[in-house]
Image (cartoon, helix red, strand yellow):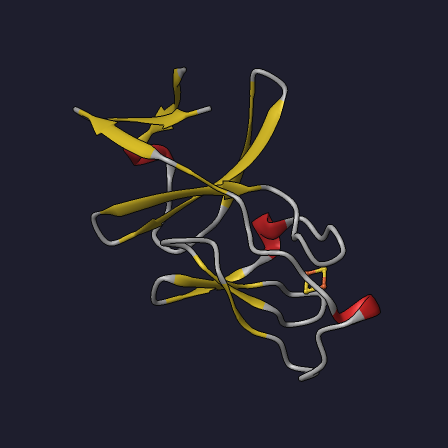
Length: 108
Ligand code: FES
């Protein structure tokens, strides 16, 4: 189902913003003319990714520094170098984005 999230003008460049869409919380990030939609909470330990830092097409969680691709959700950096137990993180869930005119829609 394609659902409207916001207007493009509601988003500041590289400033993640959380929205609740039909009970699903997503974070929207605009980088230049691209817009990404990701799950709102870090798949590592659940930090709100609205507080994440965006660099290029990746987002760094501010709690433990894990970095995920905004393009495909892949975990691309884990500062601890360990992947089991507490250190494990699945990839980030992403949502397909469509821009129609000045509005942002996501597929949920
Ligand atoms: S909660 Fe995001 S890196 Fe740990």
